[in-house]
Length: 265
Image (cartoon, rainbow, N blue to C red; front, side, top):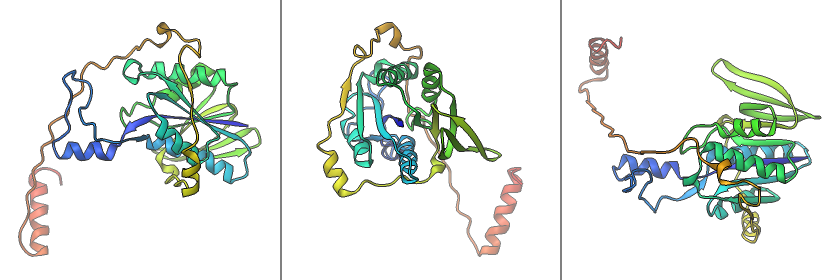
């Protein structure tokens, strides 16, 4: 059995939020990219949970090879983290993220998966923390002719089928799907594990396999973006805070009267 996890490198969302709250998040002269070079890059959190979902299948006794793929520039550190977690193979598709969109990314990932002989299960994060679109997994599934199950909080392997527990607004939903399939993992899966110190040391010596669009027989027309970023800006955030004074009972009465006056109650 072969499981492939597709991952994306993103700016640390906590650091981005801290810069934004402090009023130090700035867009460059091109109006599209951030100027802060001190913000670290790391693996998208949802994708890390997708790796965790694969590792839990291994913990349950499933026998498979785990491959982690990323499309972007210099994802070496992130992919070595995947190797430290337990990936037997790490692959980097060398492409400039600024020149592609989600359709292009899906085309690259699907082409690499086909070139490498396919997969029995493809796991992805439910969305990326930087653009929050969550469309790449569905596009990969469409390209490969696989069913897709979204927002999984648990994945179990039962013979040649998967039993997936999905998160919905009305509660959990359990579905079965035949392999090969694409499954997106939600944060309700739980916290991913940390690699051990010895695994980190071993992963330092692991080199990712680097492929190019040419290696995948993809030309510029196939990777031409359909969605173009024209402008990015930091919205102005304003907030007003008023403290109520008095004893707890008095404060409660004041709060109720204020909420009624504002038609909230």
